[in-house]
Amino acid sequence: MRRLRTARGISREDAGYEIRASHAKISRLELGQVSFKERDVADLLTLYGVTAEEEREPLLALARQANTPGWWHKYSGILPHWFEVYVGLEEAAAIIRTYEIQFIPGLLQTEEYSRAVIMLAHSGAPAEEIDRRVALRMARQKRLTGPGAPKLWAAVDEAALRRPLGGPNAMRAQLEHLIEMATLPNVTLQIVSFNQGGHAAAGGPFSILRFTSPELPDIVYLEQLTSALYFDKPEETEHYMQVMDRLCIEALPASSTTQYLGTLLKDFT
Image 1 (spheres, rainbow, N blue to C red):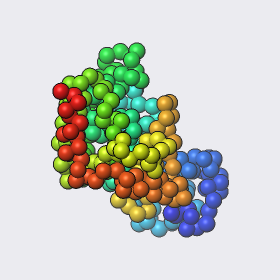
Image 2: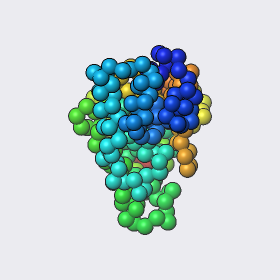
Image 3: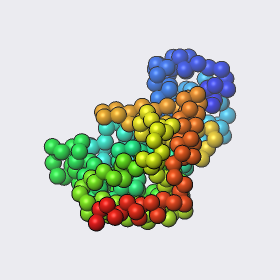
Image 4: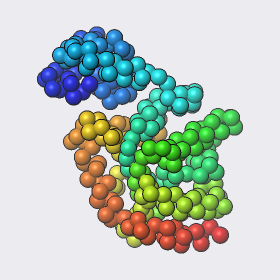
């Protein structure tokens, strides 16, 4: 929809006026942060000059499909909207690049380690809610080993590998799991060691999602305590991509990851 709009030289403000919405809503629609009403899509297609039925129908069908709840919908009671958007984007991504400084990336966590991380932010929650949050994280991981699995390229700060969340036994199991996951053909895991000193990603953790279609922009995701930021403008995402590339050059090579993790295991015996 963004490509069609920009090709006609139509501003977000004018598009919003056509469907009685703000320019901010058009931005959220194009980013996939809110659902599409089929009527709105039809009106926008007309505005964008897409009038042939054979061109309109596939896009209208996509709008109907986009409104079908994903598997994560059953967790909506514990999913804040700002993170529900990310789960949907993650599910569609072909490449996921992530940098973590405090925790093991969620897609690589064991159940026990994940529970310890979730308890940090939800210590007062009922046991049933904690179980559901853990189950959601485990469900997200299934895509890594399922059909059409995305490529995951993770850079993890050594600090996250040495912080014994859940206790020594849980951390040992987590490191052993990382060694196993690092052998998957679609997983690249690099460690940013303490010996590196300062590095390109000094600002904090972030993720970059890339999609199969070249028409879909990269998405940069920055999670905060009670919200998240999403960037999709090329001038913003390119900067983060450059930082990620530099970080992976500064990190230990992926070929040494399993050996390095094996050394760290000795600290949790």
